[in-house]
Image (tube, rainbow, N blue to C red; front, side, top):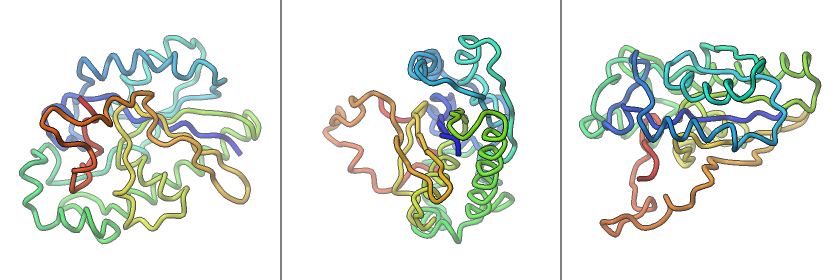
Length: 232
């Protein structure tokens, strides 16, 4: 079965504004996100990609654009099932104010029971994304063979949920996984099991250094809903 390269979109204007973008239209990459996207062709240069699959949201399509420009003829497919979680009434709100919502504790500690008002459940989000990957694995293998490699650009919570599935990790533990903007995660699927061979790789260890205020990522109590903005 194929190897899947999961690409989280580059840093967006919502990430830097501290907003939970969700499916809000018009959320684009910021300057750093555009630079991250521009570096993507070089990072994937050694891989003979069979196809690119993307969430239909603007920030994902913008992330893949330099890769597509560098590889004329690489087919691009959009897939609604890997679009961002439908955060419903939470969409477009400040993450700082959402931290005071009682539901946030459920999202952090018991996500399999979390459902967003006016939106979808986190469990439903994972199920649709896993179904999409399984379908695309079969489609890519049928067209390009079992050793094929393809890229899929999606969102933080979607990618974390796919990694949890690949690891056989209970969904209530998926908040322990971190994927920064424009990070690469590779999952090799086989007949018996998937193997996670890269996780949240940005090639930049600088984001692990202590911050200017003396804190580090290890001090973060909660996972950033939607995936966060990454390092400085």
